[in-house]
Length: 102
Image (cartoon, rainbow, N blue to C red; front, top):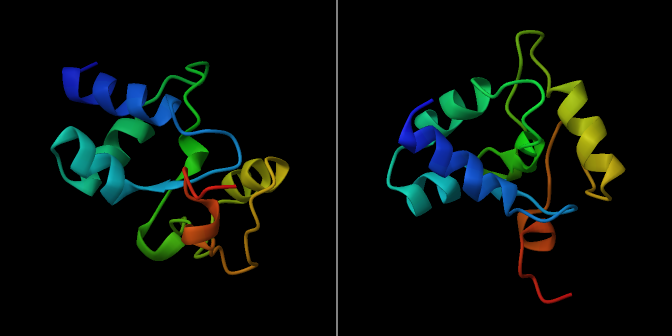
C-alpha cells in the first residue's frame, strides 16, 4: 500500500453515511488525479471497512461496469443509506454531498 492510497482511504472513511463525493473531489484533496483515486479504491482489501461506494463520478454518475450499467452493489449500498439513485445510476450531488446543511 502506498502513502497516496492510504491518504485516499483515510479521506473516504470520513464521508458520512448517506452522502457521496466525487473521485475528483478526493483527488483534489490529496493532490492526485481522479484515476489514481479509482485505482486506490479498486485495490482495497475486501475487509477494509472503507466505504468505497460513497465515491462517484463527475456529475453524480456511478461508474459503469463491464455490463454497461452502474454497479448493482454500489447502487444497493447507497440506497440502503438513503441516497436516491436513478435507474441509470445518477445521484443529485448537491442534495447528497456532505455539508449540505440538513
